[in-house]
Length: 100
Length: 223
View 1 (cartoon, each protein chain N blue to C red):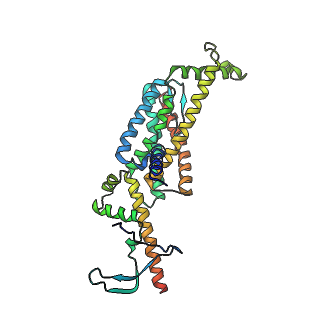
View 2: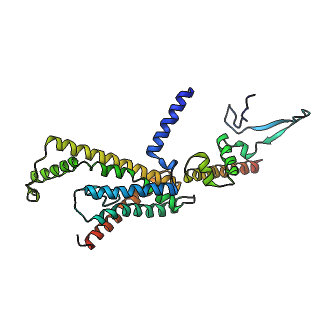
């Protein structure tokens, strides 16, 4: 079976998608509502893999650099860019919550 | 895009990255060790060919100097730019800048300087440069007394050899500048107009400071 990617953005307008329906794997009970995707699930697949690899190397940037076959500053720059992206996403989330 | 085209693109990107941004793959102690070898070879071949790096961006051939002087020029250029870019990076960057990355990548960025000095290795190139410059002196009424009449006039081959080596040196110089900028951008995590302007400013300061230090050493040693 092919792994289906979780869609994060609306194919029509590009806005972040919400989860409207969840199903129980066992009894197939459906839960409906408006659920935001968790922040980490909204990252690009490569960014999610990058963070998982960082966990696997116990947060060692040197280890991560070895995993990717790149230099230490390259992974540090990527991590800093990701931190900045997450910061902006958190800010946008809190602004949206204030509006609601 | 098919898989083969993607692979070819990746290979080409990888080659371009190695040529113009090897710091994507190499930094820290590894680049410092390789860079020190590059600097050492620049000094060694500089001594053999009488080539001088008498400033961060300077390359001159022909002036006689004691052996130890050749072993100071390239390291001074590297250290001055390393110190300036480390301070500049610390001021501009939001990332944690490591000295070993800045100094290591700046040392490796001087690899084209090694190729510059290697262009002067064949004696025929140095002879051509000597003949062309001497012929140009003879052609100028004011500078003619400084010309050495014992040196033969430049032939067409001398002009071609001299022109070719100057062109090669210029290409290497541009390549070195690109590498120096990429080394600073990667090791300090800076980009954009501010980073470029700061780099140009620090390059000019580095050129002036290194020139003053190298000429200072030259005059202090009575040469």
